[in-house]
Structure formats: C-alpha cells, structure tokens
Length: 266
Image (cartoon, rainbow, N blue to C red; front, side, top):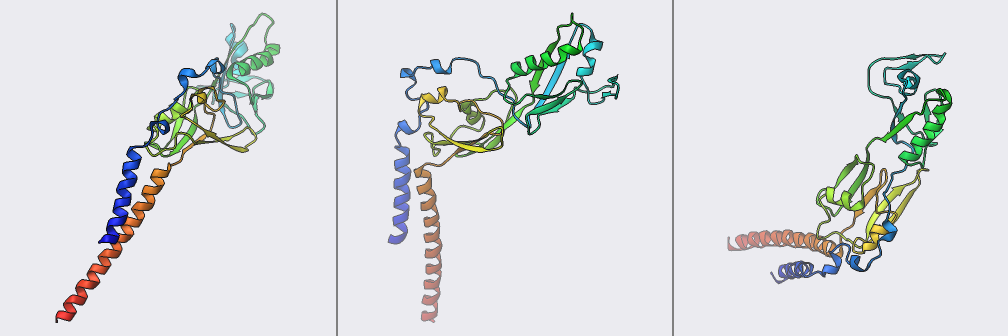
C-alpha cells in the first residue's frame, strides 16, 4: 500500500502546484498598459494567394458592355467573342499555382500578393481598353472564405472558417474555446505556408501584449495554430499512467495472494 500511496501523493501535489500557478503564465497582454500600439495602426487587408477562389464583377452603365466580363456558370464565350448567356451564379476564379487567374477577354492576370482593392484596380485597368472611352467600370472582388486550424490545449480543437477576410489569432483561439489552463500561452506555435508552398514556424507569446504589433497577429489562409501543453499537464499525464500501472499491478498481486492463501488453507 505504501508503494500505491507514493504516486497518489505525487499526483495530488502536482495538482496543488498547478492550482497555485502564477498568473504571469495565464493572463494575456500583461504589459499592454506600457506598450506603444502605434505599430498596429492601420486596417488589415488579406492578400491573395494561390488556391484562393475569387468572385469578380464588372459593372458599367451599359450592361451589354460589361456582360462578357461577368460570366455565370452557364455562360459561354464563342470563338468570335460572342457571349451566350444563361442563368446561374457568377463564375468563380481559382488562383493557380503561379498566382494568376484566367479572366474572360483579357486573359491571364497575375493577382498573387495583391489586396482586394489592388486587385480591383488592376482588373479595372485591364478591362477599360475593351470598353468605350466614356465607360468607367466598377470592379468588385470578393475572396471566398478560407480556413485556419486550431489544435492542442484548447477547449474545442477545430478547423475555423474565415468568412470576413480577416481573423486574428485571438479570434481563432476564442472560436476554438480558448486555451485550457494547461495550454502554454507563452509559446504558441504558428505554422504558415507562403505563396511558394514552403512552410514556416513562428513562436508567439500571448502573455506579451506586443503580439498585437506582430505580423502574425492576423492569420492567413491555411495557418495552423498549435497550443502545446505546459509542464503540469505533462507531469499529470505521466503520473496518471504510472498510477494506473500501479493499481493494475496491485490488483494482480492481491488476486494471486488470495489464491495462495485459499490453496494453503485447503
């Protein structure tokens, strides 16, 4: 029994120490009152990357003039440039691995690395030569929702859809149920894939309010956020396994001892 008590006492001690953990390892943005947030000034704009799906509309005062640039899924363009119109939603444009879309009439347009506004201005400049001089087209670009993945020591690990073209790491963690008490707030791992497909790892400290000024504060397409367990969770996991082993062992020993006693009595 003494051997069984030892791991139980250690487990209880670890839990007690965990409950007494310093708030310095738990609270977010601890130095925000002394931090200069001027570096975070400005609205964030997501940038277009390969494999993004874009919805693009071109509007002019003459609907017939802009119709060839607003293909629906049932529209087709003949070899002579004539547009055959049918019902349906607007055609989506998948950005290829080279960062280009194949836009009707105009042809290939390189859009990788552009913000939505920059892409709109670029497409506007490309379509104007095909319109009458008096036409001033309005171009609207919309990025379809993308996903980020949040795993590890959070309340609800999940793939988070981003429908607003902007999501901070704090919003993503909140959507996933926030960090558990066992999650390391000072060493959150962000895995990001760039436009060439290369992966990069970045370590983020959520205890430090400087995260707001970080270029990684806002997440990008296909980011992975991993919250690793702290030392208390690792210790508890080890202790839990050891305790289970000891209980199983003692149960076997007790059964064998009882069997021997019964045999000897007989």
